Amino acid sequence: MTDLKCKLLVIGAGPGGYVCAIKAAQLGVDTVIVESQKPGGTCLNVGCIPSKALIHVADEFHKLGAFVNGGALGITAASPEINLSESVRWKDGIVSRLNSGVSGLLKKSGATAIQGTANFLDGKTVVVTTADGDKTISAEHIVIATGSVPVELESLPFSGDVISSTQALALEEVPQTLAVVGGGYIGLEIGIAFAKLGSQVVVIEAADQILPQYDTDLTAPVVKSLAALGIVVMTNARAQGMVQAGLEVQSADGDMKVIKADKVLVTVGRRPCTDGCSLAELSLTMDGAFIKVDDKCQTSMRGVHAIGDVTGEPMLAHRAMAQGELVAEIIAGKNQSWDKVAIPAVCFTDPEIVTVGLSPSEAIVANHEISVGQFPFQANGRAMTTEAEEGFIRVVATKEQGVVLGIQAVGVGVSELSAAFVLALEMGACAEDIAATVHAHPTMSEGFAEACMQITGRALHI
Image (tube, rainbow, N blue to C red; front, side):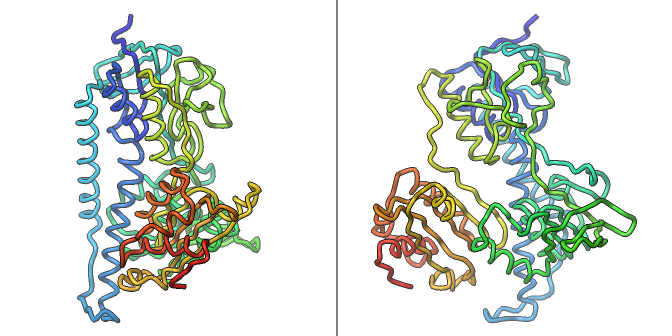
């Protein structure tokens, strides 16, 4: 017996799911959304938002520490102290406010939110286990938006002092020693934060460099920052498991070393969460571990869509949101398809890294003849006045017409430039367009115009 019928059922209230449900309900679609946890998914509850809150706490604490013995700015401060449990409560307050905000938006839009765990009976029917018992929901369209979870190593299962990013963001005391297994963006963001809070941090990375998805020009300022913070980086190294004295690691030369660690943070990637809602009942076509979808986020089963991390890389919240909005409009009867030129990626390390579109090497592989313009923040007045001279903005454009193919930047606060970067690609801008646009002075965004000026042969400040 069906307890509830609707036109659209969304499974998962993460960034993709809740945006899909809100948009669909706004467009008049009878919508139900099911989530087993608090709304907002990994990003809001245990990922993007709490990690940025911790990074902010760490940055402020680290700045105060720099003033203890005075310095070039003429500021002297007493030795600062950190009460991490208070910081965690502040972080949890932000998460709670955003949880309430998402719940309020769902209610205001007219979507029905149900807390429970969903399991497929078939492509049109789902059983949801709630605190009040099971509910059977029948829907014309179903959207799978179940997100992803941290990858767990067989040799380092999450237990005790071996923690995932979720547990790391809930620690109420700063560990004296922290080993980070995985030198990708999640491990480095959290590792840098704890180093600024006073932990002795060691990063173990199996590849030959940290942040292996980025070129060495972009990662060089981050490597320099890690060294300045006293973070030890072991590349071409593999964590073997826990022994009584600490974490056993096989180093690049093949020797076994034991790293003392009060906590071991394992951040070797994330995997799609496709094993918890009886997806096998649907026999969907898969692309490796991910659900295969077309340019309308339609799966191999008619009426079943999938969005977000379950559909593959890039596993980013803003991609999921865009997919959620797309699917909502399709179900509401609009003729839409995925036509995004680029998805911006941001690494909130110190300094930050932003990439949009093609890097120089990727553009060459794609058979483009290119021109590259690059402007260092060392020549930028705003960067100088904020002690943020490390890094640069780089623009990749076609050689003949100057059409922008990609933009990369590394520097303090460059995440806030990502909107301008991706807008340039979506609008099909040429380097000349950006170079001729008046950029406010003094701002770090001037470096964007200056990099394009270099491509057009009109560089002014370099």
